[in-house]
Amino acid sequence: MPLPILALAIASFCIGTSEFVIMGLLPDVAADLGVSIPSAGLLVTGYALGVVFGAPIVAMATAPLPRKPVLVGLAALFVIGNLFCGIAPNYWLLMAARVVTAFGHGAFFGIGSVVAASLVPRNKRASAIALMFAGLTLSNILGVPAGTALGEAFGWRSTFLAVVGIGLISVAAIAWLVPSDVAEPSGGGLRDELRVLGKLQVWLAMLIASLASASLFAVFTYIKPYLTDVSGLSTANVTWVLLLFGAGMTIGNVIGGRLADWKLMPTVIGTLLAMALLFVAFAKLGAVAAVAVAIVFLWGMLIFIVVPPLQMRVVEAAAEGPNLAATLNQGAFNVGNASGAWIGGLAISWGVSYADLPLVGAALALLAVAVAAASHALDRRSVVQT
Image (cartoon, rainbow, N blue to C red; front, side, top):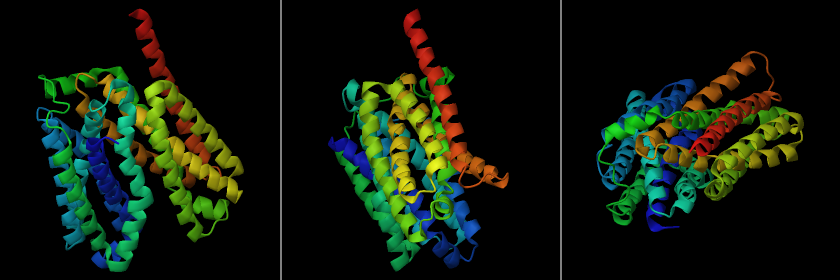
């Protein structure tokens, strides 16, 4: 792994750990701050909304600035935000600290993916983005379980303070290893960044990202009751299955980068179609525990096969001003997270059983396939016309 991309991966590991570890600490946070668990759960929602609405603001504000100082500043903002999370005396200050931290999340991944792609030859750009996102996938295997265990042993605040320590390492690594002249903004600055948002292919790429993410979270949000009620697994075994899901994500991230460097849109279309078929298999065969476990692993692999190519797709479609579009794509993934969880919950409230819930994910994945196929057809038509 090139050292500058390693620095970005360390930061993405930190960001992923901080974003997801709160879910395992919710009962401790709620008890310590004197709020209900559902109220503590809004800390997850607040963070997601911070990514969606804060990231483009940060991207636009920093559009004319050199990329390296912006990345250092965003990593530092993340460190400061987690520090205030660790020392927040009450619920509302913790919520504010989470939202401020989230402001740096989307912008970092958006700008960082542009920088990572610029550090390697054109035929390896998707792999470079995948290497940066490897920190995010590893956070689900290593960071979140370790952070949860640390919080249970020494209090939830210790987890955020540990993230601060790793975050400081990432700030130093970016300042030391990332070249000073990397991916400098064009002379058009914010004007160029806004102009590319008029491109249909940019919005289609973000719509694919939202639908793919929604297909995941429509089912994954309710994966614990599915595995216990439908597959018959114990609560303890669910934890290990989720770790297996994280392992699949890590493997898929690497595969996705390499496949996207070979054939970008065919990789997206083929993977989303495979996801839809896997959801159908989950609905039909999920009652068999061994099959359910295997499907969860493959599911994690497939969902992250599409992440590097979709981020690369936005960077390519918005080549004249990619930073804002790449940042908005991170917001698109988070919109998919929130809407998928809502759609899954709505389906359950309308009487869809846990056993049939994967069919909702299959429908959303097929919608993503349709949009991706239309986008690819537009590419081919443009080539023919040219």
